[in-house]
Image 1 (tube, rainbow, N blue to C red):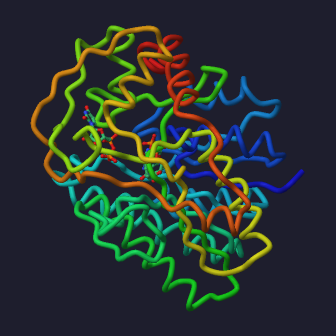
Image 2: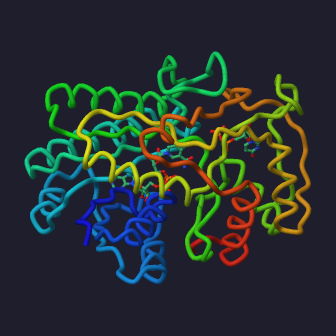
Length: 338
Ligand code: NAD
Ligand code: UDP
């Protein structure tokens, strides 16, 4: 056994896949989730995928008593901190909720970890901390200028972690900046289950392909990109969570403050994605070009070389695999976990 990892937000989209990858790699997993944006069914499904199911605690990361009980009951060696709110548009309307959930939870978690003597943490940051980059691909040393309360909450936690590491240099802190996670576990048992109207491209496309929605609205075709539509770095969620497992192994032998992009290094346009999804699903994905979405940038993709150098990790799954796995999940679970 490789030790026990606390996964906050472990019932969510990325967290549930991370639980499966950690258990697969030989870790024991304790999940803390308040299910504000997820279903306990996701964790049951992880239990079907893996030989040993994760231990589940329903609770809020801001609840110090709850954390203390977990650290008392289990010998935790590291924490993967996924819990948080993540909708950019919603964060503009509900900034206090976003700062409270994302920043306060991290403060309470660090204090509880300190008391328990747990000194390894991996934090889910986002490429959104770069804002509109001066050029692509984006390196970790680029200037940071998030443009939404969500993005600023991520940057605040990154800064808190850096300050914390100065005061506690024996800690190992990893800030992972994700590009655009998509796809699903190859079993089709777990995947992304957006509540209501999907904000992100891939789940929207999948819902159009399965017939849940009539057409995709493409937000602008007049960007300075090859076909005029927005370009992003889509990364298969299985690659992303495997990146977490190697990052965890790395930080446990290498104390320090580490900041690493997790992306593929490939830019894919909205229309490329539509074509790839049509091919993978055998369904047509009708679309209509509409005006740009406020706050969107033209192009964003990672320079993934630091992850390759430090972690010997690169994303290996193709765009076709991302679409095939998302389609398997969507077809098998047209209403998600409901
Ligand atoms: P998600 O909403 O599916 O998962 C987050 C989980 O955290 C949910 O299960 C939710 O119920 C739980 N949660 C939220 N607040 C909580 C709290 N206070 N206490 C306990 N549980 C709480 O989101 P996701 O896509 O899996 O994202 C995971 C992390 O990765 C988030 O921090 C997100 O900001 C970050 N991230 C996501 C993306 C993306 O595109 N999905 C990109 C970059 C970064
Ligand atoms: N997009 C789109 N229609 C949608 C959702 C997204 O055209 O319904 C575009 C969006 O403008 C961007 C790309 O798809 O160029 C990825 O958007 P997403 O919200 O998934 O990721 P983010 O913009 O946060 O990187």
